[in-house]
Length: 247
Image (cartoon, rainbow, N blue to C red; front, side, top):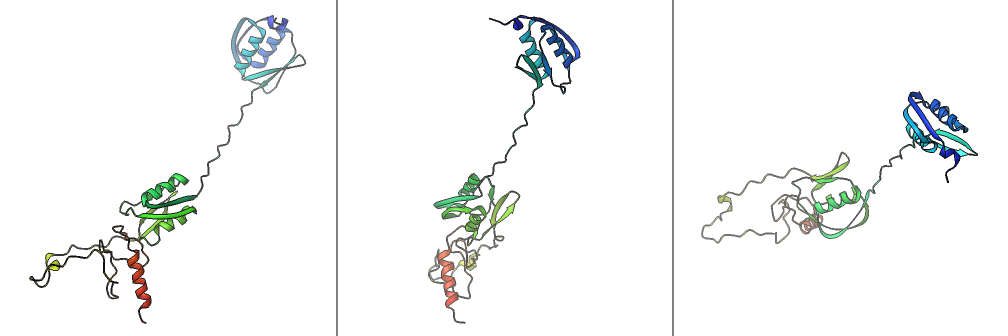
């Protein structure tokens, strides 16, 4: 059964009236006690005819962004406090990576770094797609880049929020050999086929070059930065010869 208060029918009309006056008129019609917070200051536009008290109170609260509660037979009207939006905490992604595998191409490695950390690492278009045997279970991003670039003729640098891998220097211009240079001195002697790799250590007075593309190598390189050929066995041998050379 409905209580006597809920059965009271309300008629209200407000055209720009102060909300506090409208609430006062509502509770006067039902002769109930109410408490209204003083900071409720806004105008109300509504027309309610023959409306049950509870429904009229709910509609008036919705129109004024308020809510009511009943304590000991007294109605308390208060504004609805808007809760502050939750603070957006920027996700901090780890700056350490796990790189473990055999024969992983360079561009696949940098894609994995970006995937794990969200840090963009780009590779210059002219960098060969070297392959790496990696066993880095937990290493900082920059330490991983050092491992990729050391001894390969590559270097990394900071670019904005990410990194870029590029060659140490511009490729060396090497003109194609002329027919006169490639022809043997004696026309009757058989043509000498070029060797794909030196059969002995490079003489001290000769430049150490890649057996595949003839690019000049440095002793600490493991791969040729021009063609990506593995040259560590050559550079190690040249270093040993330099160390054994009498001074």
